[in-house]
Image (cartoon, rainbow, N blue to C red; front, side, top):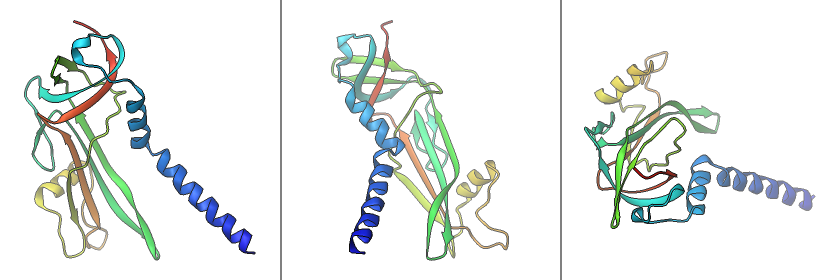
Length: 183
């Protein structure tokens, strides 16, 4: 019997480790680290990894929740779903928008173009929440409405929501992996 309990605990630990290891953002970060880093002035073509400070190529975007100027933003609104003694966060809304930007290091600069296949990992550095005795702020309610959602449930009680936003701002250090070409 103790061996069976140990086996069950071992299986649970293995499942948790596998879930964390194969999480999308962790896979992307491992793929980025696998590509050798080069300086922009090297002028290499093909798949490269470069890092530098982000700059705008035109008018920046405005992040909807925080109002920050940026070249890219990702927003997730999640709702807490309780199932008895525990629960989990379920994604209600995910909004992503980006535009081309400049990347500059000590050796030069490059134009970075984002497309539909771009995989971006950004720290969610703006957070807010609403729930019981904590109504959603006006701009959060407007964001929810734009996506056909509301911060209240069927009986008018507030849903437990969290709002997460990450942006790429001017001057921020960014690492990019992609196919480089000279112009």
